[in-house]
Amino acid sequence: MIQQNIVGYVRVSDQKLKSSGERRQDIDRQKEKITKFCESMDWNTPTFFCDDGISAFKEDYNSRPEFCKMLREVRANRIHRIIVEDLTRWSRRIEDGLKTMREVSDKCTVTSMAEGEAYLTTPEGWFKCALAFLMAEWSSKSLSYKVQSGMLRRLENKKNICESCGVVHLGRHPKTCECKQCLERKGREKRREKYQTNKITKTGASLG
Ligand SMILES: [Zn+2]
Ligand SMILES: [Zn+2]
Image (cartoon, rainbow, N blue to C red; front, side, top):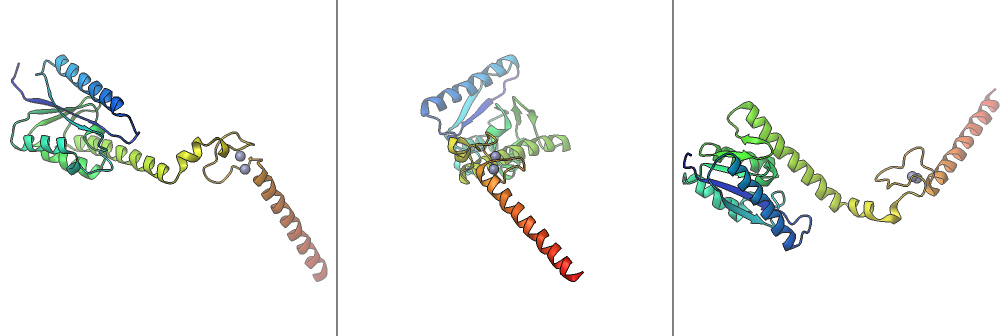
């Protein structure tokens, strides 16, 4: 077995408002998974860098102390391989993710258990990483948008379920909706239409 210094990078966010016990469990789960993976590859037992309760989307990588510590170790040529469960642990921002990935890829190998080896040296490698970070950023962005705009609260509130359709309408109601407001609106539109056609026939009649 080649003597390699292998580390695992683990991160849990508190975005979903997990209790510290739940976060602990998630950290242990990631560590165990990575350790087993290393065993199966016949690699050395990994040591871990672990950021607890830190979102890779809200904060940039500079505010993840263990991640920065790991980068320093890589710069000092003390790490040969980094394992992550998936690339969203590395970053949930395309700019940060690509920047740090580019920095370490000259010095060591990054292996994602979900996506395979991550590197930017080939077009395919770059595409895979960029896509993973892009998707992660997109899903974080849309989640925080939904939270901010109160969309999730509206979805969860039973009062907002349409009496006619049985679902929550986030935007305009569908044409088939027959809730009170929709029926009223349809009634108004019908009356207006009737009024308009009456007017046209009347003016038409007077013209003729
Ligand atoms: Zn409806
Ligand atoms: Zn409606």
